[in-house]
Length: 112
Image (cartoon, rainbow, N blue to C red):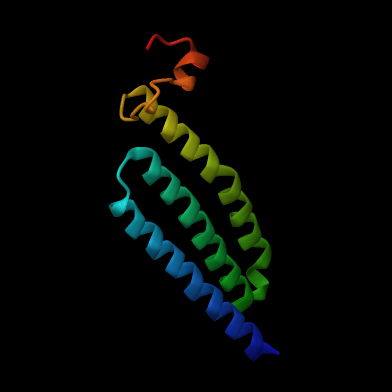
């Protein structure tokens, strides 16, 4: 039974590491700020959660601590991505869509 947990844990660690690597690669390949924020948030969240799950299978006595870290990650990653996107928008690094409508500026009452 312990060998099965070790194999599952190792597989999850490798899969998590692959997602983290692909997320880092995606940061270099994406063309604009919003795409980079999305890659950085989605890939690192999934990669880190898989890595934490793999560590949980390898060390079951750490499960509660790893679960708390995973919950903290699930709460903070989307929030940080939203704050970064809003800051990029306010600083003018976000390009408008082809129709020129900026819904965020309209919601904030900013002038176009």
